[in-house]
Image (cartoon, rainbow, N blue to C red):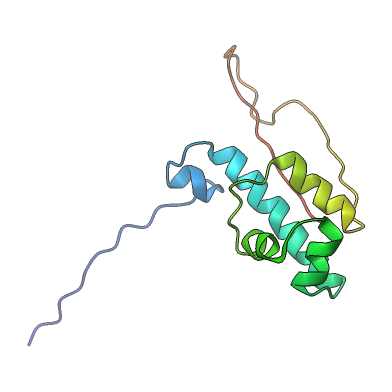
Length: 116
């Protein structure tokens, strides 16, 4: 019996899964996801339960659960940044020219969230 092999096409990621999936507002979604990861790490480092984290951030426990699962609808970027600072983390925003600057008038830069 002959073995049948299926060919699977593999594409390199752009670095933004939301853009790769052609989601609306892909850059915003990625930024919010990166901030949520920082919040999750801070909660873990502070050894907080979900109830304790909810009290610290002034939201209910189901809200913390959603945030930690990446269900970020209803959380603005600004609100997520506030949560980061409430968890004893600093937020530093750096604005600089885009690395791949083009001559186009309507070129866009990107937003990156880097956790240290």
